[in-house]
Length: 257
Image (cartoon, helix red, strand yellow):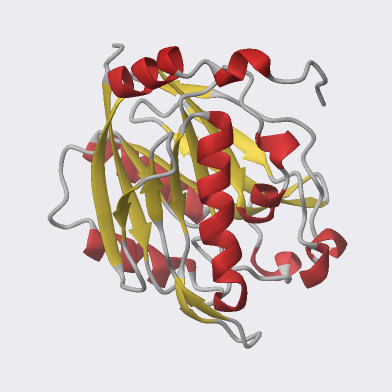
C-alpha cells in the first residue's frame, strides 16, 4: 500500500572479517529493541567485509547470508537490504539485495568496481541500475564507489530515495560526506547512506558517518563513528513540494547512459 511516509533504519557496525555468522549475531543484537522500520539498510559486504577473496567466502543464492536476510525480513516484517559477495556461474559479484517480508527479492550488481583496491580483478561488474518500490516509494540502490559517478546516479525523475551501501575508509571520509550531499542536491532526492566502522586486516580504518540527507542536502540523521541504528521517517509530501517549487530536474540534459 502506498504511503507518504517511509521509515528507514541505518545499521552501522564493526564488520567481523570473513565471518558471516558473527556479523549476523552483531546485527541481531542491534535490532533487539527496534520496531516499525520499513527498510533496514546494511553496509556493503555486511557479512564478510570488503574482501578480495571471493573464492573463499562468496556464496550462492542459497547461502547463509541471503537466507538470514530472508528469515529476518519475514520474522520482523520489514524489508532488509545490503550487499554480499556472491558466486554465480563461476563468476563473483558484489551484489546488493533488498529482501521483502514475503520472500520477494530485488538485486543490483555493483557497476563501478574499485580498481584502486583491485576489486575489478576479483568481481564482475553489473551493467544496469534498478529502481524498486516499498510502500509506493521509488528507491534506487548504489554501492560505495558508484557514488563517485553522478551520471550513474542520475535521477531521471525515477526515484525518491537513493540508498548507498559502503565500506568507505577514513582517509577519504570527507569525499563521502561531500559526494552524498552533492548526489542529494543534484538529484533532488532523499539519500540514506550506510558505512561501516572498525578496522579490517588490509590495514583500512572506517569511521562510519552513516547518514540521511534531504533533497536540499540537509543532514536529517547521523551515526557519527558509533555502532548502532539510526531510524528516521521520511515524508514524501515534503519531497514533492520541494520538487514542485524548484523543478530543476525538468532542465536536465537529454543524454542517457
